[in-house]
Image 1: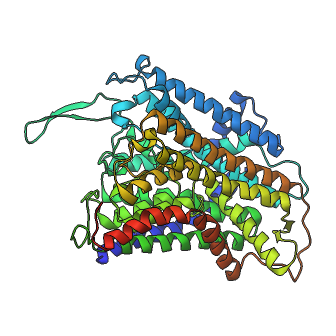
Image 2: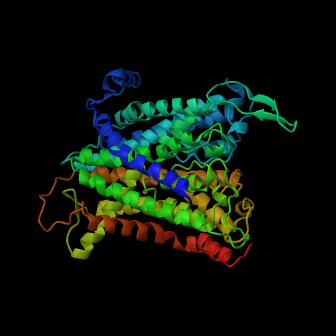
Image 3: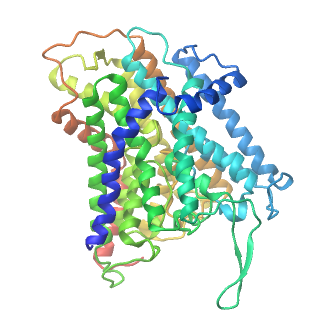
Length: 563
């Protein structure tokens, strides 16, 4: 690494630290319905949305009604997106005359975008019409992200409420998250990306003749608007097949920097929002510190591994799969940011990363979407780990665990464990099924531990709503489309529903008086315990998979072995 590489790492980290309290303070006001910068210009739009949808913004919901509203809304989104794909050949805004999507691919993609996963088994420019991209995929990028923010708000109210039976209103949380946070940020970023060279039109593809005389079709489309929300909403699906490595998605160094920061911006800012809503900002700072520490540790390990020599190829460094205009430092930073944030977009091939760099990306996903994680659900997942940490600490000192004045009892611990174990279970079950069946083995392109990692990475990415992939796996088959789709559903909703149950349980509890012997959760000691709990519970569950995949591959590469 040289000084330029170091700067390309430090600048996005520094911007993240600076922007977190600024955006977090604004979101705390906007999401609670208080006066803020955009109240006057956008309040009429919010009120109009309530009138059109027959929503009473003053209504409060129990956690069960909140959860049922969330599930029904997402079911409607799935059906609408499935229909758009299977009928797109007959619908407008399809200048290339693209065919309808097969049922299995349409099922996988509809589930993927509704669950904020954005796993893609297709090439966007050769499969999806402009209407499907705009009305289907782009809209779901907003709504799935807003759904995650709503879950975070419900859980936070559970901590704040004192003996209440309600956790807020799902429709209000969804609307405010979209109108006051996601739309303004996406609008500004999309304009900047267009300025930098990203395409934004509905024109037919351009036919051109290359410098060697060959015919070439240059894809067009409304890309910039979808790129903005895919990053800010931790969605990650590429408008084009090459995703962030495509010059129409990521045209300049400035665009690369802004997209990189956008991946973590909202999840990071929500840590500050959390502290403001609690009126205990140190609590939010502890969460941010834990997330930032895990991110930095993963980034350092991945950079060390990627810049090291590859003895199996006799090369001092390997840049296969890395766009030379982007470079190794930006590739590694993006791979760590995108897997830490449950984003899934890429600007280089994760398949081509060194074994340990690919392993870092895999670990980031395996820990449960909490190293910043997805918009909203990342914070909710971290709060679940906090509850587990408090519970374990209580066991060590022999007293009833408490967090923010609320006793953490058996119901909260059981629900918290479901949110951690459900994704882990489907990762292991799905990977085993793929590695034991002809249909699953048929999609593997590599041999040895790398091929094993391709499969485990795919199911981990699906279960934890990430969406990135080891590109060597051919997953666009009925087996993988259905299997991964089902895993995405479990990974999303068997974590959200228990979290809402925890929110409802906590909201109904009255606060206990703080005691001098109480275990403080805003100290360095708790910060250390929280990180230890995440590593032990989140990583050791999958250690056998890591040992058989990236770790073995790293050792073989060190011996100069190929396979």
